[in-house]
Image (cartoon, rainbow, N blue to C red):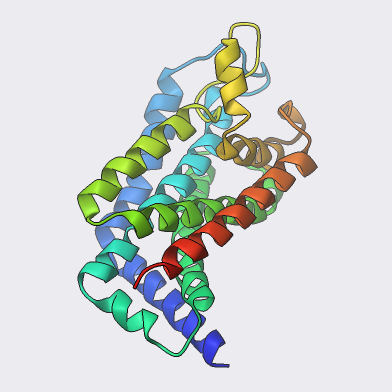
Amino acid sequence: MTEVRGIYTLWLREVKRYVRDRVRVVTGLITPMLWLLIFGSAVRLSGQPSNLTYQQYLLPGIMGQALMFTSMFVSISVIWDREFGFMKEILVAPISRVSIFLGKMLGDSTDALIQGIIVLIVGAVAGITANFLGLIEALPMMILITFGFVGLGVTIASFMQNLESYGVIATLVNLPLFFLSGALFPIRGPTVPDWLQVASTFNPLTYGVDALRIAMLGEAWQPLYPLYYDLFIMLVFDAIMITVGTLALSRRR
């Protein structure tokens, strides 16, 4: 019971910190609007299905971006808590290191999930998608994406000594993953370089974005991989990052 209470308390703390940060919430609303309404309206790409507008193609990709970026950057709280001494208090609490990691991971994942839902709402209000059943089907995939990237963020943060270093490393990790995931442009086709197609297969976000498009676009989207394969890769990625993240957080003294 103590472990469950500890996990819940850490989860609630992370969620409250996110919800009370109005600047972050407002930014989470404005940023996808800029991508979808301005960038999505101005750009046309070859290689996308002819029965899709670019905004429809772009929406799942921007969701994946929002989930990954938020998951990575909310993990900065590990460094923040360490600098202000809160992490030391957590580590000496009568709960296991696994529960500490789970509490922070679930809290950060909830923050990222809220960000993803904001993107969904923006897309629905803008009339980019009306497939509400697909939006519901996308929720489990959004959760899988957040778990893995929160684990990655916590792992990186556990080895960083200051906020500035984490910001630099997180950006260096986020941008290649984002651009190699197919979020903005097709990563399959005769015009796509072979090296980019190969690199995308090692990118976990590729499978997350593909799964989101399968759920949200239905038959209008020709999947890169079968849905079960996308889910399997994401589950493996989540398991690895949760394990590594727990070990990385446990090494703190």
